[in-house]
Length: 465
Image (cartoon, rainbow, N blue to C red; front, side, top):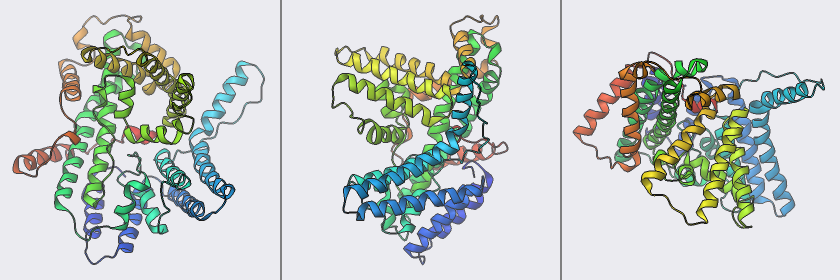
């Protein structure tokens, strides 16, 4: 089910909110309602994968309980491994089986060894990368004595399946919502509810009015990369850079807004990342909950920066390689992760020299470095990425009619507006929302403009990860 759909907006959400804020419903009833609504939301794409979500929930709930109750370190490690293997096993099977099989076939074909493997056609369950990370963090935190197990299966199932952020984040840890699930209010906090509407409508506008508008201009260019030349290649890359930002940022803001409407406070997931002055700052601002997850559950356990400079650089590279693979089962994603790992390594080395660039140089330099990486992120194959890179440096020619190349002055104006918003305007978390008539009118205009564009289904980009 999409946030930007008639059924969600005019049927599912109003019914859920009406029932959720019915004062006569007890806590267990609210949790049950939330779970039921979330399973309906998740099963809208394919009802078969609801059972997968249930199994993952049950395994980690039991593992977490046993982790907390076990008296020996051996038993605690066993139940932690049960959680890790079940979650990573699900990811490996559904997300990476085809990738590993095709990679193996490529290698044996190149070596002329024979023995190719059949490539399984497995449907990727939407959101599996996100909710498996959430349930793993729950087990790891209990193992580290940083969290207590959920007081009931209802509480834990509600945490795992929370529909506002189930599909594409933000990645919420159990400690973020534990107390909120234990003490759900019987009536809404109207200031928080109003902020939820603000975040939801603005996030929807970011997705539909901004991301989808530029997508209509750049998708045809990416569909025909063989004919890209210098200007069209730069337009396609800059356009996709903006599309991805507003698409994913829009989803995260809509998720936060829905959480507010239900009385939950979710962590911020974006903080104007393209304004970063270095690549390390970029990863503290982009997909923040994933960056912090990788830091706390991968970088630090690998040793972090505790064992010398070379080990720190090694750990950065490992984390980003795995982070790239988490985003997608393909060599383009692996190379994208390696590229960002290399950028972090270079930044870390230069940081030891105490050399600093002025911000008017460092911000556009960082943005350019990120933009170059998005080519790998967007390309469907390594050959396509190489083609686009060749076009970006002018090796495939320059258009004769430069300004008309991507689609006319409107296309250039749209791209200019998006870049101006990215670099010159505050993000939603920096705006102090105060319910008033001007805000109400602006939100109403945005809402109507978005609804009028519901005619074409437009899934969020991060659904594929």
